[in-house]
Length: 421
Image 1: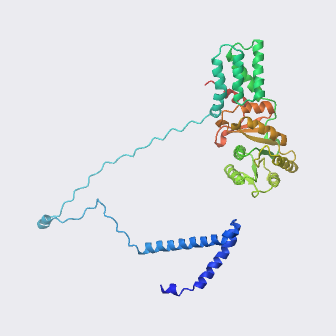
Image 2: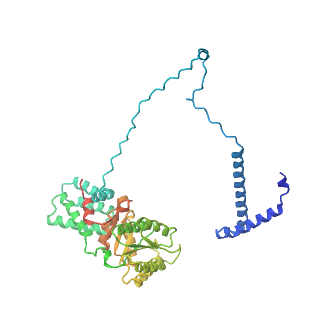
Image 3: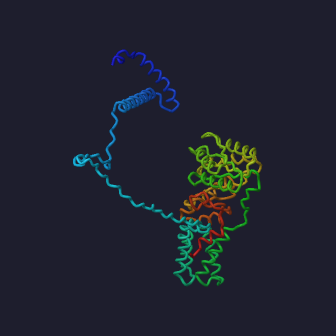
């Protein structure tokens, strides 16, 4: 312990003060309040010294602890001298080891791979809740009646409203049924069911320009929506689909307000092997749109997908920012954005329709993406949006997999809903 007595404690304290002085700026940059910085620095030093002492003690234990003797195996047999054998001069006879029969390893049968579901079957699985809520209740009502009377029509109206078709759409369908009944065209409940199918197809299939990403180069898609609807995930899935189709895609991380939004989009970009243009968190979204547009032109990209910050549709200043981003895109790429997709959460029902109306006032919409359709019984909102806004539903989400974001097919949608199998 002589070295401890000869230790110059003044030098030690000076070194500690130097370390504390170096830690204080780091703690300041980390956001530690000034009154707690010195105490925090001392705490860090204390923890560091404690760790060093513990490691030193463990090292000493390892050095001075004698190695453990290997245990004798039970199957080891000690050599025993047989006195009688020694006298007679004969060595003990060791028994020959028994030959164990070889056991053939059991081969586990591999489970049969699950057969891949067809697109129709996946749609049917995704729309099962909506089918039960809407068509299942309609069928139950029609099976219980033999005649088409006022009571049947009233109950049918209630079912359509509660399935989130909305009042205007429901009134349109009920009017068609009453007209057919007045003309004598509806003689049985089954004919009512057939009429509903035909009317829903008319509502969903209307004259609109299809999404043609080859109509411009680069084709700019601006994606908007409130937080939590699956906007960034939708962009990632779209990028993956376009990339698999041989398109050169660039993503613009315009959501600079939500924490880690750009990082999330970069993960999707890595999965799809596409480039992501991003700025630091809190940067001007218009600047991101500018750089993304410049990059898309310079790299001769086929498609630019621009993410935007999720915002409440009731906040006027945030909605005004969408107009600014649109102007920036149009200035750099005349005619852009060529498509404005609003992402809606199908589980919100009629609130999704309200969002669509308010967003459409700020930035004219050209298409709807309806996510989480597989997790709700409110799939009737698809019909309500098409009927009241005349905006096509471009894509629907029917699952969590990459290819579960599907182009919307109105005829398939209605056929799956009214499928009796």
